[in-house]
Structures are given as structure tokens and as C-alpha cells.
Length: 466
Image (cartoon, rainbow, N blue to C red; front, side, top):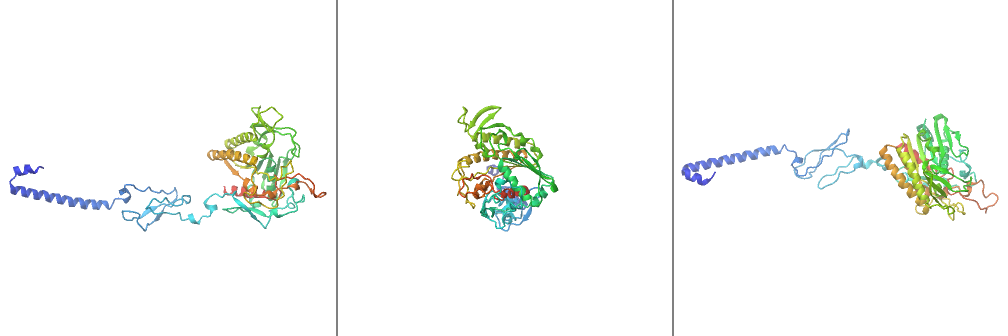
């Protein structure tokens, strides 16, 4: 309303009264507005008043929230009671954007490493074990002669009194009775080379302290065998397949070759694939055999070879073949509908010193070594790098397809035990006639009992803990 219009059309007394009335109405309205909004503001959530409201932390389904009263204000407006759900143990503390208070899971500081995170059984140390092994060469008659070091005359005993101790969790010794009860009506297979045969002897010796296994099958050369534990209807098999792919091998019992191995890298060995679905637990391994001279095939056509100077073939190298073979095996494992559990055991390096098995190499140590004291040989490292790459990809894929696939990496813990091999005592009493006799050493396989028994302790824990 214009004031000049009032001056022209209203006499002075009337103008004075009108202005007083107008001012009165203005102040009454202002007072009402202040009272109304003060009352309303007491009912509005402080979160909604903030230009940057905090995100609500929601409890997991079926996990009732915990109510906590905050004793100190975090910012304006004044403190209020908030309902804060308890964070899951693996989340630790809630992020701390200032000036927000922290909330800690009540159980976080109470959990031991084995309870709060998965145990790394392969990171540890060999420590003294006064109680010694779970069996002896006298209490187990299943040890094959080349691994029966004590019977063959090995004089020292210190190598028997060590156990593997993971650094952040406990590793109990395998309880054979508990194991057999868990494995009632089940079947196991260990698939691979002679280290798998070495491994199965260790497991059988431990379990034989409860019940003697019965040999129910063997092939012509006694390389593949099956045993049964009658009271538990539990079967263990070892399947000889050193390359895991189809192979024609030309060598004698001492490992002397008369011709190159012929490998079909795109065809898996049917000796194990035909039985694959029959087993509840499978341990697959390979490795060292790929260092042998070999001719490589794919689609029944020669691709090339490894270490075949007398043949007019392309030198492809063992690493080429190992990667291709492992890829074929891993593709089979992760694409199968096998309902049991499959382990891939990484290969374990040899400990030949001052030469190789064919050139006078020996392994005379009598105690474990420290980490870094013995370097892994270059060729062994190449095999391991390929193995970790291909098996790692398979483990990732298995997690997507639902296949129960685990890697047991015994490489590092075995690297520390150069004292655990038969050495010259792969033969019976090798120095009985001549203490200076030149004897071929075995620095690849393991004495029984010996460090390889630890493998069964770890596998048992991985099965029990899931």
C-alpha cells in the first residue's frame, strides 16, 4: 500500500489510527509465528535437520540391534539416544569421520586368530617335538622298502622329533580314530606320482594304529592300489598318473629312460578321470616328471619337445607342457559336477646337494634349516610359478561354480626339511660291506615316519574346519 495515497485521501487523525492498527496486527502475527515454529521444531529429528544426515547402520537379518546411550554429544543439536546395531565381527570399528564416536564389536578383542580369521597352516616353523612320531617302522608294516629309512640303517634319529607349528594358530596331530569316524562310508583317492604313493603310506600308517587296512586292489606293477578299513567301510586309493595327462613312458624301475616320454597335453589320463566321481575326497598332484625329456602332442599331432637334441623338433620347454597340462586338469576339475572335496597339492622340491640324483648328489643333513638357508632351484621355481598361476585361477573359478576345491601348499614347509629324505638309505644297509661305498641318494621322497606325516595333520584340520 502506497503512503502517498493515504496522505492524499485520508485526513490526519484517521491516518494515525489506521497506522496504529496496522502495526498492532503485524506484531501479533510475528509473535504467533515464533511460538508456532518453536513448538514444531522440538518434534523434528535432528538427523533431518542436518544438511548431511548420517547413514543408518542396519543390522543383519535375524541379528537384533543393540541399544546404546551416547554419553557425549557428537555435534549440535544436543545429544539424543540413538539405536546403533552391533557391527559384525569382521567389520571391526565403524569408520571415524570426525566428530563421530566409534563403536567396537564386543567380541572383537576376545577372538583368537583361529576364531576371527582362517588359519594359514602353511606359514610357520618346525619346532622340537619330544613325543616323536605317531607310529614307527615297527608299528607299521605298510612302509615300502625305499622309504623305510630306519630299517635300512639310517643311524640318526633327530629328524623324527620335530613338528610343524603354524605361527598364528594351533595344529593338532591327526587323531586316527576321529578321522576314521568322520570318513565312515567314504572313499579317498590320491592321484599323482611316487610322492602320492609316499603320502598314502604315511596316512595308512597313522590310521593303522586303530585298524589294519586290507589291500583290496593293485595293478600289475603295484603302482596303483586300494585299501579298505572294514570296520568303517572306508576306502583309500592311490592312482599312479605322474603327468595327469595321457603319457607313454619308457624307463626301467630305476628311472633310466630308453626314449623320450610321449605326452598328449589335451587328453587327460583315463586311469583317474574314469573313477573321478567315485571318490568323496581327492588329492591331485604332479610336477617333477615334466622335467624329463618328452615329445608333446596335441590333437594327435606333434607340437615339439623338451630336451630332444637328436630329433628335428621345435624345443618348447617343459614350462610350455606343464602349463598346458595343468590348464586341462584344472578345467576338468572346476567344470565337473563332483560333489566331494578336491585338493590340489603343490609339488615339493628335492634337496640334492653337490650334484643331482644321476651325478652324485647327496642329502646328508640331520636337522631342519631356517627359512632362506636353502634356495629353491631355478627349475623348481619355474614349476612353482606356473602351478600357483594356473591353480590360483582354478580356485577362483571354483568359488563361482560351487566346486569344493582347495589348495594345499606344502612347498615352503617341505623346503625346510632337507633332513627328512632317505639319502643313501633308500637301500638296505648300503654301507654294510664298504663304509665308503658310492651309493645313489634319494633326496626327493620322504622317510617314514618323517616330515610328510605333517601333511595329514593339515589336511585333516582343513576338512574339519571346512
